[in-house]
Amino acid sequence: MSIHIKGAQVWDASRTSERDLYVKNGRIISEKPNHAVEVDLEGYTIFPGLINAHDHLELNHFPRTKFRDVYDNAHQWGEDVNARLNDEPFKTLRSYPLWDKVFIGGLKNLLCGATTVVHHGAPHKPMYRKDLPVRVLKNYGWAHSLHFNTEEEIIRSYQNTPKNYPWFIHLAEGTDDIAAGEYQRLKKLGCVGENTVIVHGVGMTEDDIVDASKIIQGFVICPTTNMYLLSCLANLQKWYHDASNKVFLGSDSRLTADSDFLDEIRFTALHTCLDDDKLIRLLQNRFYDVFMADFICFKSIGWSNDCYRRELDLVIKEGIPQIGDPDIMAKFSSVQTVACTLNGVEKRMNVELARQVHRCKLKEQGLEVDELPKGKRFIFF
Image (cartoon, rainbow, N blue to C red; front, side, top):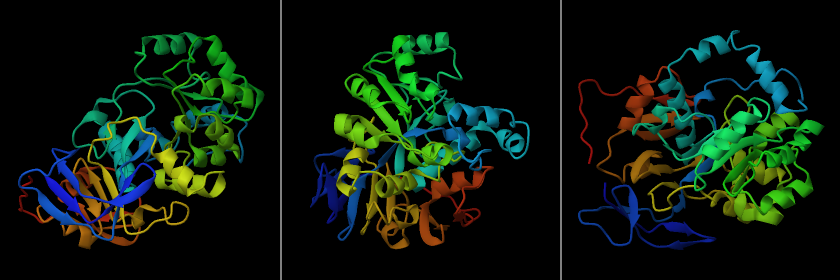
């Protein structure tokens, strides 16, 4: 689709301004394209599609799980879960096809406006299908952790990752002495470098943060997971003071997180040192092509209070509306839609996405989508 969006307040850097947006072939362009569909969004604010810097896409159909009130280290939680993988409900939930599991992970993110996701784990082929609801970072390296990988595996993974690709690892995800020593241990292995991205880092000392902030590419916080498992958060104030441009926000999976990326934003706003302005600057740190036409649209929202997916008026991925309030979806006359409800709020969903939702053997919590009209074919531009 070629689109000319006018009348909206468009977020740019640290402020909003009214200006026109031109979209062609899923990308933002500088001049109005021929035969563009004109859409008036006066009264709305457009914000770039959100970037979820940490998720395990194939694990979001599992229930939030722990077996102790508080863990000293996430390694303990991992061992607890691994010992029960053949018990219910894990046994049944593990048996679903990989595509369905990955699709639900992508759908969870799209519905809350996170149109790009950094997956932590193996680069499963289904994640790069065109009909996945979100865009997934493709060029990256990774290791799970110093507990669930051998040192040889970690060194090999790091050395085999091109230096212009980010390399991700769960690190210092705990409050015990083991977690406190992991950064220095990783550094001795030669795996702390300009492309290293540390996830969690709750147990890192202030000296570790000072050192890492000068070297690594990024640091990812997953606050609702950390509070759920550890009753503790990373030293975000220190990170933000030393390297605010390197701090990213991730949702983790529903195995440990509250629900979705917007819940992480709201929790961060309410329970950390960041006010709305600082939080928005954190959200602008991104691993992807900023010229992609991914948007979220809302009439008014405060990241601290109203940051729920049901409050988003519109989500656009690559220039194509995916889900939104009925009145705003009707402005895109060439897009066929189906009625749905999201957490009790009436929405309209792009029929192609609705088709995928009905095909999926798993169901997204809080989402109900009407059946497609039988025998009717849809044509898209």
